[in-house]
Image (cartoon, rainbow, N blue to C red):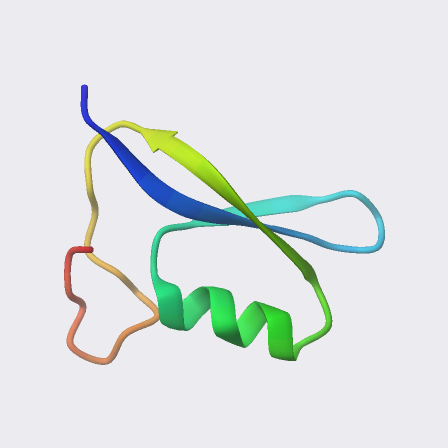
Length: 56
């Protein structure tokens, strides 16, 4: 399995969402969530946040 850099967005209730798109992380920061850097282990998937559905 491959390791890659990703982000975890943590809400005020403690719920965490994981993503590996830098645009997604910026949008979560703008929404007021706490964003931390994490290591994601697993396969890559097409990004649903980007308009082009790129694989990051």
